[in-house]
Figure 1 (spheres, rainbow, N blue to C red):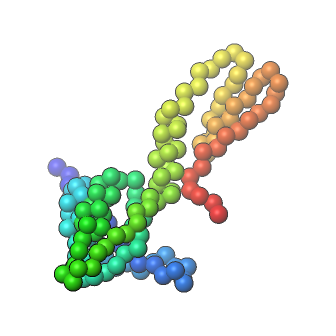
Figure 2 (cartoon, helix red, strand yellow):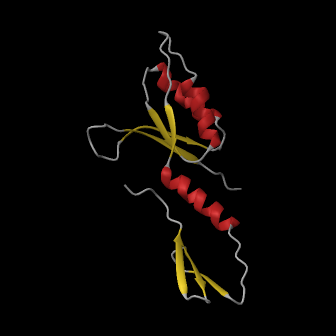
Figure 3 (cartoon, rainbow, N blue to C red):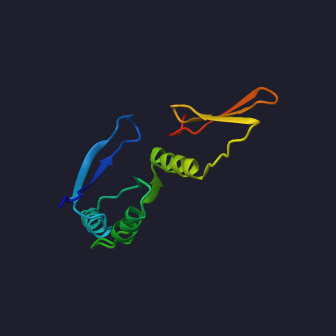
Length: 143
């Protein structure tokens, strides 16, 4: 029987630098439940580590863990903790892209030719006027 491990890494980033951040905590569990993560986040509350924002995958378990473990936390001195939750855009677009691809069902007809290239670009070609419209579902946000 194979045991699945979930790893969560917490980074701190400075607004003045453009680095990828410095790891400040690691959590490895054998469950996908929100409870170990919520318990781990209470440690940050107890140590009065204020976190402005959590950037997470598209996971309701992570949202619940942050709300119950960190945002609902009150330290011994009465400090309140409330961090924003932001979804990682690359993960969000990946999920969106997968959903769109699963919903796009194009029936072949004698007048239209539909192709999908190797890079995920969907090409619609109308034979009647020989125009070609391209729609590409991309992952990530470009500035």
